[in-house]
Image (spheres, rainbow, N blue to C red):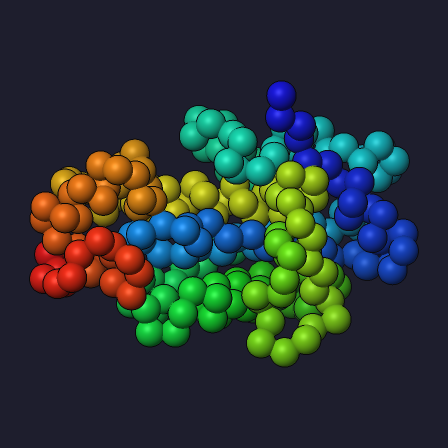
Length: 226
C-alpha cells in the first residue's frame, strides 16, 4: 500500500536550519527513448501554513500526494490543480531530445532544473532557502550550491518533491499524448516514449522521428527521421 509523502522531512529541516522557502525538484522521462526530459519544481512556504499543519506534519489539502509513479493517471490529474493552488510557486521545464543528444542527459536535466528554479524565484521575488533534489547525486547545479540537498527516494517522503514529480509527470504525459496524434505508430499515448517492446518494434519498422533521442540505442543503424 502506498504511503503519502508528508511535510515531516521539511519541518525537520526547518527546525535544524531555520529555512522557510523549500523547493522540491524531481525529474520525469530520464529513461525514455522519445520525448523530453521534464523537471518539476514546487516551493512550499512554511510561514504560510497553519499551526495545525506545522504541528502534525500533514497538510490536509495535499494529504494523499506521493511519488507520481505510485499514483494512477487519474489520481495525478486530480492532485495537479490542488498542488498548483497551494504551492507558493511551481514550474515544469523541459529539454527536448535534440538538446539531450547534443549535451548529454545529465547536463540537459541540470539546465532544465536551473531554469525551473529561476522561474519560481522570479515569481517569489527572492531566492529559495533550500532545494531538495531526488536522487543520490547533485545533477542540478553546475557548481556546488549549499542550498541543495540530495535525498534518495525523496519523492516518496518529502511532500515538496512528491508534488514536483506529479506536476512534471502530468505535463510530460500530456505532451506525449499530443505527439502520439502526429505519430500514431509508436504508442506514445500509452508508453509515454519509454522503451516498450511495441515501441522498439515500431522504431525498427518505421524508423525514428526527430522526437527520438537519436544518440541512444534505438536498435537501428540509420536515422531517416519521420
